[in-house]
Amino acid sequence: MLSIPIVSPMFRMVMRIISIVVWALTALSAFGGKFNPEFFTIPAVLCLALPYLGILSIILTIFWAVTGRFFFTALGVLAIIACIGPMSQAMPISFPKKADDGQQTFKIMSWNVLHNQDLRKPDYPGNRPLEYMIDSEADIICLAEVNNFGREEMGNAPQQTIDSLFRIYPYRAGQTYSDIKILSKYPVERIETGRQKSGGQPRFDIFKVNMPGHILTVAMVHLYSYDLSEEERQVVTEIKSVNTAKSSVKELKGSILSKLRNAFRMRAQNAQDLREAIGNITGPLIVCGDFNDVPTSWTYNIVKGDDMHDAYAETNFGPTFTYNLHAFYFHIDQMLYRGPIEALDLEVGKINSSDHYPLIGEFAFTK
Image (cartoon, rainbow, N blue to C red; front, side):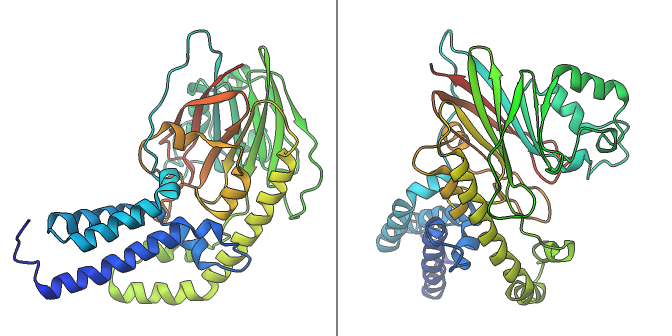
């Protein structure tokens, strides 16, 4: 047993309280996606924090084990075991795979590209997003927040870069009134899915890509965002002391919580619309893009259902994040799949031109 001076009775009492609270919050966050956000908002919010609460739960359990406190060590272990299913999605223990000999493979990228802007390097003499796409070696690129492929959304890109992109990806599709588009090395056509019940701009679009020997269906999504203003997004970033934390909590209880509640409800409807649209699709299917929600969330669970696999969870070790501004480091971009394909790898690209990182998945056909 470790004996250190700071482990006094008072300190242990404080640590017990902290541990019980953290383990309880971890359980609520792990299963928060089981609560319909139409009626319960707090569990949906806690879902966002599962990786952080999970790591903290593990640290606290190790603390009690090192200090030789069997009862609280056992409580921590039981809490982790109870949450192991959801935690394995948010914090997987998997590794990339290699294709079998003779398997046909392909790469697909999904990215909320923010109209090809460059938030960090606005004066860059070119266009980093386009250059990244060109260098990606992806066979298919699915984009959100792109209104069209016109010159006005190419930023500082020289014509040579644009020509290179279109030469590599001669096939392009997407509705003129939607911000979802697809670039492909192979012929691609959009599937008519009917009007989305949640109204507003289209939150997903579905395409068929005619690859050599296979037809791959790809659903690219951009589900309802949190709709927070720039000032509201700064609330978390500005928590640097007890006083600023108190001020932020007041704001969270006000307009921010109301907007979060509405966002969770709207995404739930988006997810239901999407699930209905893909319900009758047969063959290999990939659903990817900006879910604006995390693994284990209500939205994620609706889309994933019982028949889809998570490419990140099956090929990666540990948690990740795909949003990179305002200290909202959450894994809100997903890549799910089903049918006669398997995920070999999924990389979270670290180009920071947009507020989202791209996902680059490698897959193999199994039939």
